[in-house]
Amino acid sequence: MVFKSNLLCKIIGFVHLINNQLYKSKYLTIFKRLGSHSVLALIALIVIGGATRVMEAGLACPDWPLCYGSFLPFNHMNLRVFLEWFHRLDAFLVGILILFKFALSIIWKDEIPNWLPKTYSLLLFLVIVQGSFGALTVINLLDSYIVTGHLLIAFLLLITTISINQNLENDYKEESLIWWRFLLFFPLFLTLIQSFIGVRLSSTWSAHICLSFNKQCLILNTHKLFAFPIAFSILLIIATAIYKRSLLNANWKYLSALIFLLFSQIALGVLSLKTNLNEPIFIILHQLNASLFIAILTTLIFRNPFAKKGLNHSLNSQMVGINS
Image (cartoon, rainbow, N blue to C red):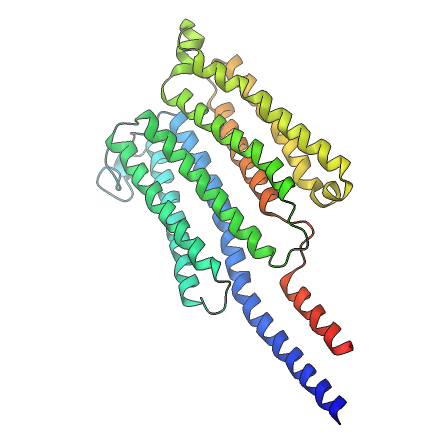
């Protein structure tokens, strides 16, 4: 009788756990889907912002937050106005999406991990700062440092969003891989610096002055030189993954993408210089590549290839208890 009673208690506990885990996983699935949409929207926002900068459309809308005093300026619409208007629209939608996720995390705080509402509050703060920098960009007539800060905050939003997504995927971890994360953080940090230099390069017209008059070439030369440590760090990561076969097997798709993006980024940089920066498509693709590069590196940093899914891990633990 005692045995049957213990078995019945374990079965009841197991059924309760299944219902509880399925209940919670429903909420987490919603956050995961919203997170994936946020990543795509942020990458689009960064690329459209780069296109706006390349096409010299940053002041195409002379006021803020409206454009020529209206939400949709039909009477003034051209390519430059459309780029600036669409950039603001995408930024507005990203802000609404993040605000929506923050509100849901407050409403469902008892059903989700404790860290999620706090992290979304940080994300919301970054959105507010990003919007402020967007306004200052127009008010201060495309000041170089404000434009640079505007892009870097966008990258911080992207990195934070991806880290949240990966942490939602990896509730239970078997191995921390601190050394692997540190190895990946190095090229991520270098790429952020490289992007900072790239924005300074375009927003101060240093590249055009250097190519046309052979003056103010320090920023351009620094930008080109930074490609070497980034390339070396990526090759070191690939070599380490090959040596540690388990890392290669678990991450080969991401590592293959990194190699492709590295060489295509170098090729696009060379093509941009060869055409004297007169082909906007090369510069825009250069910005897209940088965004994808940062996104993949961030994913690899926060992704644990040896993690067990939270539901399966809990169910397996309970099954062991019942069998015993």
